[in-house]
Amino acid sequence: MSIRKKKKSKNLQDKSSLSSSSNPYHEPDDIIFKSKNGDVMLTIKAKPGSKESIITDISSDGIGVQIAAPAREGEANSELIKFLSSILKVKKSFISLDKGSKSRHKIICIDKNAGLTEKQVWEQFQDLIEG
Image (tube, rainbow, N blue to C red; front, side, top):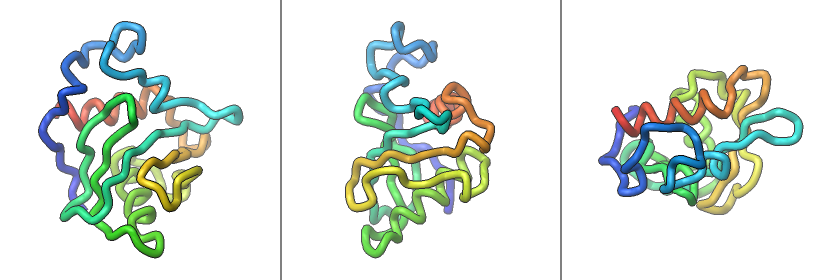
């Protein structure tokens, strides 16, 4: 599994601020948010069946992720969790699929015990895209 960046998306023209009010291209609060119990939640647009797992873009629809596994018998979901744990540098056991097990639109839960805030997660993804 490699962590490779894809070309910058049109949705990433202004990356100077993490504030959702100053960034017209997407609302971080909509794609990375905190649950009622304090877990960090991610909105993911999954694209299974790719040659390698990579982050493709960040938009108002979610974080685009190409997954190096087919969409059958949970293989792509397992690879997605493995890939996200390597990006966020947390154990796989801290990451779970909350919604969308059979959909391309998924909600991923990062356990509050992983010690990550929404801002830290946002910065990790921004750093990958910006290079």
